[in-house]
Length: 223
Ligand SMILES: [Zn+2]
Image 1 (cartoon, rainbow, N blue to C red):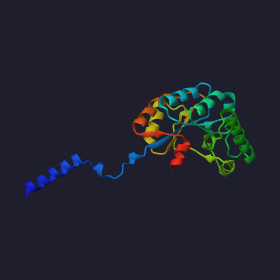
Image 2 (cartoon, rainbow, N blue to C red):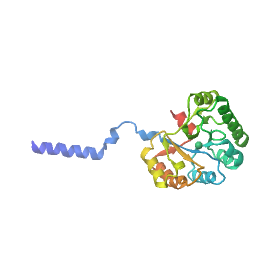
Image 3 (cartoon, rainbow, N blue to C red):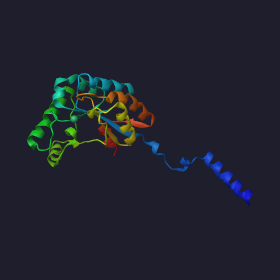
Image 4 (tube, rainbow, N blue to C red):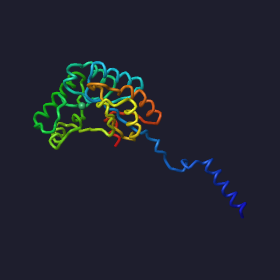
């Protein structure tokens, strides 16, 4: 009897070795790649945006840039390049104001002015809007919708805007990333910024983990 149980155990172990449990788990979740969207706010910047674009080009991955109208007026070339290289452009207002407490007309003007600048420089009409600092209220939501915008925030804040170290940005992303993540980064920060340094490490690791980088449109169309 003892010998019988021994054989049973051996057979079970052998079966597990030959047919790992995952082989019986049904269709693999890896059949559809996990998607993640990198987003860059507050540019274009005459130096930083090009560095970000160089990094994205090195891995042939797209991202979404939420641009500030007044910066685009001053530095149109990186915006033109971003569109030419297949990136998506979002509207981040003209002057980056705190939108709550503003009247609807002045907010609408912020959106329209930026939209016109983006269109005249790069020939595209943004469909996504991100409020500065993520601050919004019912008026902001209503005006954005009336102007044909979808309001987009983020699921992971790298805190690069607060001068976070490269290792802190990396940890923040690796600890929270999941299928459908929208990662908030900046291509312009006034002060210390370690975004590029962090992304140089993060991008190859996420690719290795099976993530596909997409624009915000690419992510939202997936849902
Ligand atoms: Zn911003």
